[in-house]
Length: 97
Image 1 (tube, rainbow, N blue to C red):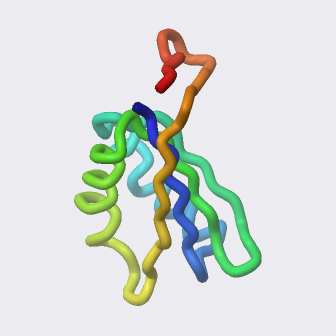
Image 2: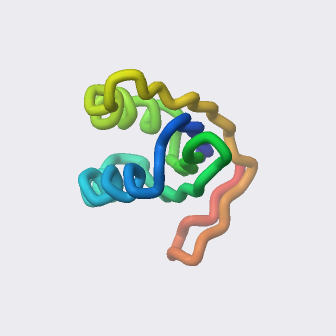
């Protein structure tokens, strides 16, 4: 079932987030299980939202592509929530638990 990942990144900026997306965006689009990425500013950094087809795929992507490239001292707090359902504008992407 699809999973929502919420990552709170203390100290991250819009410029930093945009730079990361520019560097890894296309690879992320190609990653097995990837569905969606979004983010916004918070009082102390940035909140990132990812939707993946499974928690395992989300964890694998973070471990392989993100964690090794984080700046020193940056440790996103990631939480996972299995989604009850998901409806998108893309064909054949309605899923329910």
